[in-house]
Length: 191
Image (cartoon, rainbow, N blue to C red; front, top):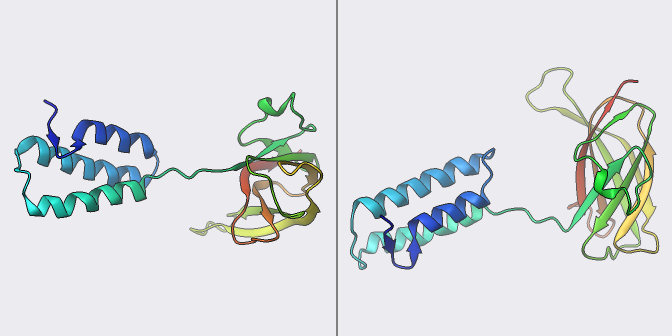
């Protein structure tokens, strides 16, 4: 039976919270346990509306769920390809592509909001775990400052890497080097 406590419908609330949290994250487990607790409390006991402990505890639970299960909204994306990227082939790009060593890697930054900075910083980060450390070592094999171009929503260029491994590409505005505009993961393997 579907019971309602105040204005919060327990089943609808659990569906909303579960849809926002991904099953791979630790937040999903926390959110699931909180939702299970709420469902058990609401279903097992018909609580009166003036129960002060629930009135104090319920807003804390709701705030915790929304803070831990919120989606990260990205306003920009980086597309990678072995061929030059244009409007005709942008839909065929892979999410985590694999390239060969010394192959041209074409990238396109597409942003919903116009990029205000006329100069952008491209940075590739190589993750290396050859010594089996719990945290992989990182190095920056390629970084360059480049001009944005005439279109403030799209930036395209290419680069070449000479080592195999797992890489991340990040593009920053020179105005804010703390937060990348967009980032993407890709792989480079030996020929």
